[in-house]
Amino acid sequence: MVAAFNAANPDIELVLNVAENNVARDTLSTLIAAGNAPDIIGPVGTDGANAFAGNWLDLQPLVDSTGYDLTQWNQAAVDFYRTPEGLIGLPLATFPSMIFYRPAMFDEAGLNYPPRNYGDPYVMPDGTEVEWTVDVLREIAMILTVDANGNDATMEEFDPNNIVQWGFAFQWYGEGRQIPTMWGAEELWNPVTGKAQLPERWRIGFRWWYDGMWKDHFIPNAAQEGSDALGAGNPFNSGNLAMAQSHLWYTCCLEGTTWDIAPIPSYNGQTNVRLHADTFRIFKGTQNPEAAFRVLTYLVGEASLDLLSVYGGMPARESEQAAFFARLDERYPQGVNWEVARQGLNFADNPSHEAWMPNYLKARDRITAFSTLLANTPGLDLDAEFERFVSDLQAIFDEVQ
Image (cartoon, rainbow, N blue to C red; front, side, top):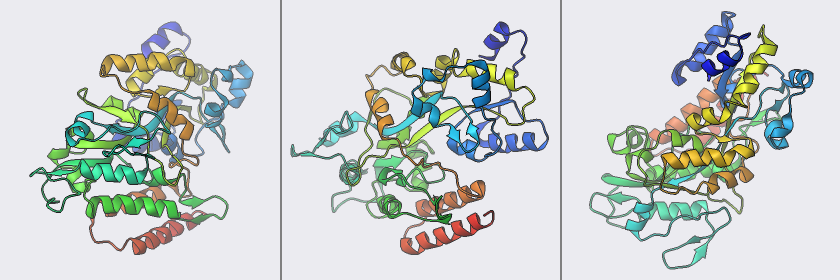
């Protein structure tokens, strides 16, 4: 993409500076501190951008001066990037979350597959139709969790110390806010009161996850997720996990053709789909705003479909979505139900699970420590841990408020 741009635009030299994911944040911090930040940064999502809040250029003046057409996207996609700093991005990649599942494991257990569309019921083994809820997901996942002797997690003979197949996992859940979002769109910082909070729906979600690991055993704990049996950290790809919640970007890293996707289950009649959205942004301190904007519009325009095929991101530009999924079908020819991804945009979490908080990076580290504790420690007093978590977050917020 860089070579193609430079060939077509001899008056601008675009130089690529790549940092690996695990060091990208520190690398960018160092470059900014040294006064040598890139003009254009990305692709980066909400969480990554929040870590550098205040450093993004408002694109609206450049849009106005060049007459750039924002109507090529729907209004909501553009407004997603409007913040108190201004218009800090243009739509590129969207990554709705979904349930990845392995049909062969459902066949072996004599279970019907998850619904194909949002709003469709799930058909239980006895033929009754029920709403596809988090409780139904748990019930099915326990049947799909099997020990070495062939007993599933609903049976009295089940051996939780000798599991060979798990029913469900939150695949790569990051610092932890992704987990309870299935129970509702919430924030840990209340923008009205300025106070830390852990809403009841999120407490219920965290408890469901915790009990799934340590009581019901259908969710692998941290040690199990990191084991060779579950792909040393990539559990669904191991072939020993029946269902996983992840995002469309997971199509980057799947092997084989024995999987499909299904809707996110509901809770209390509401469905909340975690949404990631990545794009390129222009550094506020750039000395080349007009040239950077030309590059930016190339990346989100002419180059977008090729880039998105690499990133695994559904185009925000609806006219490109059919071609995008056609390319994915070439890679995964089993007939994946991509309509689930399209439908998921209608249930995107708002506020986002990656919403900004004061003292963002330090707060984020405390959230990571909280989810790490739950994933590694049986026998916790969750109510006490919830209160400690909120108290610690409040102290972190107060440092900068």
